[in-house]
Amino acid sequence: MNRLLTATAALAVLAGSALAQDTIRMGTEGAYPPYNFINDAGEIDGFERELGDEMCARAGLTCEWVTNDWDSIIPNLVSGNYDTIIAGMSITDERDEVIDFTQAYMPPDPSTYVGLAGTEIDPTTAVIAAQTGTIQAAHIAAIGGALMEFPTPDDTIAAVRNGEADAVLADSDYLAPIVEASGGELDYVAPDVMLGGGIGMGVRESDTELKATFDAVITEMKEDGTLNPMIVKWFGEDAQVWE
Image (cartoon, rainbow, N blue to C red; front, top):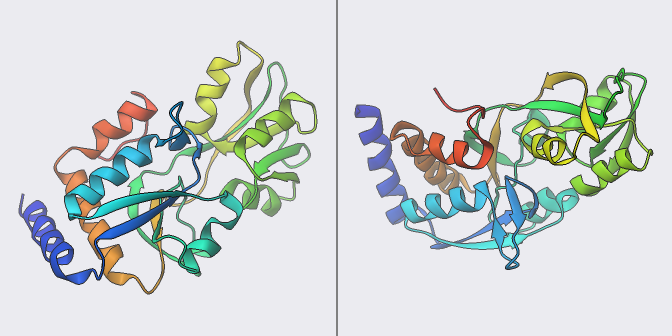
């Protein structure tokens, strides 16, 4: 309880005086369900939209949502096109050299290999599709596999279906619904791998006050029990949650 009160008090101070602006531009991809996607009304939707809106509300900030292609999402944060990245981005040492991260709001999720049903692959010798600039692409390169990089996650799935790639490597939370909806066409074809340090919000290294504000909100949501139900709502009962 004391930790919760401390986090809440810190949040109130930071939101009240530390930030020079009360409108925060939230940068996301809009193409990685259930983390983020564009719904039938043409609006940004998903777990991170709900989470981001709640975080801004608790901090007394106004959120403006901006979509950006994944392969330039970090450079456009650094150049000031938006103030945060909230886009299913895993915390890694390499990224942390360029931007800063809040604490994780999602625990680390296994990365899974998905290919055509009835096949098994060796990731070190098979052709693996992955989205450009992801931890999965970096992993395949590191193990010496044959990597095919694509700009969007949809492209990686298409590469498997049309025979360009033997499998796709991506977050389990992204691939599981696709496998389930494939009608037996797709399946898991190699053991999972654990990559990254969880999913966090990216900010510019100079925005220390903004980082502290959102860190306080994430701490509050973990400790008051509101973050885990939100994760389960979007990712299912088997989702990794905070203990």
